[in-house]
Image (cartoon, rainbow, N blue to C red; front, top):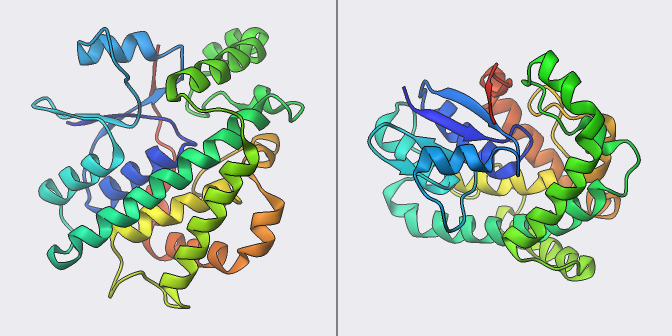
Amino acid sequence: MPELVAEWFAPWSERARWALDHHGIRYAYREYVPLVGEPWLRWRLRTLTGRVSTPTLLTGHAVYGDSFAIAEWAERHGSGTPLFPADRAADIAVWNARSEAALSAGRVRVVARMTEVPGATSEILPPSMPGAMRFALQPVVGLATAATCGFLRWKYDFGGDLAASGRTLRATLEELRAALAGRDYLFDGFTYADITMAVVLQMVSPVRDAYIPLGPRVREVWTSESLAADFADLLAWRDRLYDRHRGVLATVRPARVAV
């Protein structure tokens, strides 16, 4: 059985999980904790240097290290309607690149906010983490989160220009609004382009807890009130997509933790 190493709250991981679930792929799930889980992931990937990140899918025959590649693998090995229609493959890749740029911009604000919102660090542990481990880590979770935020800034080499990141995210959302033009899908039907852009809205106002459960303080970290007000139509579009195409498969699985 393939094994997906991912983070329950991360839009990058959600893209991969959504594609796997859409295609009916059965997989084991392992929760990745940034910084703490990196030595384990490097051991699994047999690599000591270079960047490693999640989501990562291990199939026994190959390793797929980003959500786009995982979704393409699911398309080849799963069932259900195609997410990558042949006549739209190039266009979907363009929307995925836009999603990557927007998510990277949004991450700048999220990482900065994580240590600014009181109590947010106490909610960051994954809901799938066993209770005993959660209890043991609580006394150091604040320091660990601060260290993790610094680690992420170094790992992804981003600065703290919140204004620039906000402009990038806003411009991408305006492109999405123009392309949708009030329609339900970017193309003739539901594709990976819709998935990859829907998760960008996680950086504006997180989807309901039925799909991605977050504590109230972490939800505050991820929310941009100004963008949420300006792009309420896109949030409604995102929510319709989830209700139609995500369903109960989105519930967080019991998981082992990558430590």
